[in-house]
Image 1 (cartoon, rainbow, N blue to C red):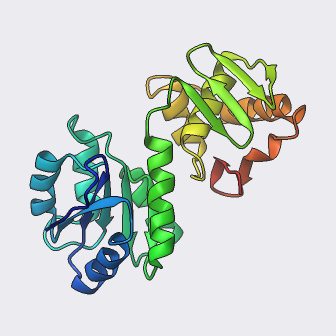
Image 2 (tube, one colour):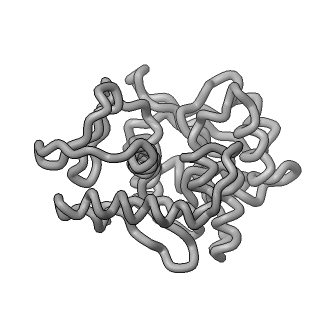
Length: 235
């Protein structure tokens, strides 16, 4: 099913959910939104719609009939035609291990049922903001301005320098805010999967990054999540 508005530039959101009650609740929320809502009841239908409609974001239920949402996420992230589409997992599984499995499968965010339509809309907008290409190479978040074209950093108009690794680390954090990444994930995303170095190396560069940000009193943006890893958060 496809619900269309009048603005052709609206973002397309694909909802993959087999529970009618949840689809109806989300559908109601979308009537007052600036998005176009696409619907699929299972993974097979979703795959067809993804290839045909090229959605800007996918709301994906974990427990689907046939191919599970987790397996579908794996498939989408391995396919060059769909691996750039952000995914928000919808599930009743609220345990930490389940959240990690969902994120490891390629999900960009994770919403636990039951959830409010207002929360879901906020999550959608947040994921779209951080996955939309930077305008003119400028990225601003938490008071930090990063110009990736000129390779410049500033806070409140005052420029500062970072080492190449700290710069890449900060860029990754700013383009993936509010999500927790463990050392292994950061090594893979920032250093690259073919680099073999100790995981504790991440801690060294985190300390260097925080030290550089301390001068501008924004070091709190780089947060340690005990037993889980690190995140960039403005909250």
